[in-house]
Length: 304
Image (tube, rainbow, N blue to C red; front, side, top):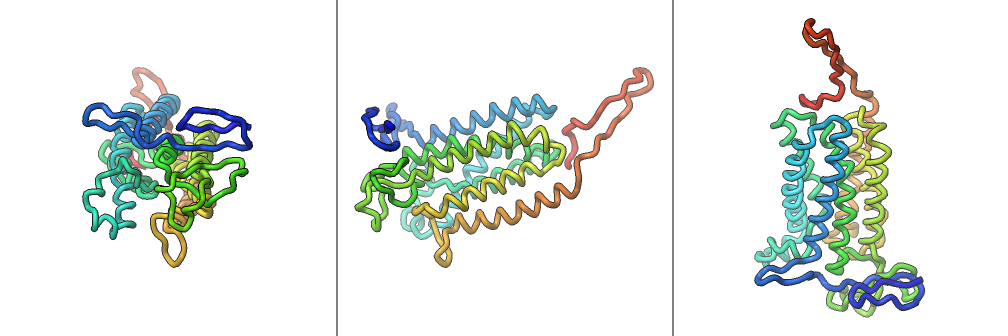
């Protein structure tokens, strides 16, 4: 099998597939530096937004209001992701406070982003009198797509990698010496855990978007719980081989502990939502002059 070397573009014959970042910078335009990390995050958001608009139109939700909701969720989610990361590395940022805003170097933790985005979505739905569970379900179906694309930003930054692997390992990621932890300084190749999570997130997106939504949307809130459950399970597994945890507690990576906590909450939410039963279908009669009956089941107005 051939391997891909992003730095040289060469494809010599070898066993397995090798990934090597060409560097974090795409180009410089005057004083502006365009970086792969930001490009991947923005691309993931736009792709997820387009997918969500299509689903919203198909199922009778207000697509334009969802765009506004998504923008607010994205902005507050990025803020939450950065605050979460900074709080777990507070000692480093107290010494170098100027780095707090340097998000282009990485340092966005998805758990903080999920919480921040959900809070922003709830506030927007409440203000616009939209059904919070319905719009959160729609949001949850496309978040994994944004995550799948965004993970490639970690590739270009040479971060979010796993334990060392041999030169014959089928999938391996070359990490430059300056990006390796001291204890693995002599190792060249590592598990491409960014790739594992990217593929897993895309599979989760495909399941939620193409299969689960049309079958489970009648249980408002259930798809959000399934997303959190699915992502948490995947993160718990992948975290076992990652070596770049931002913090640990009693020897356990904080992201693993947070994932376990979110998993427990999501499982309880799934049980409650399913036991509550599907949303009832209500009908309302238009005034007698028309004699028409209107099905209100798809109405997204009102807070559920």
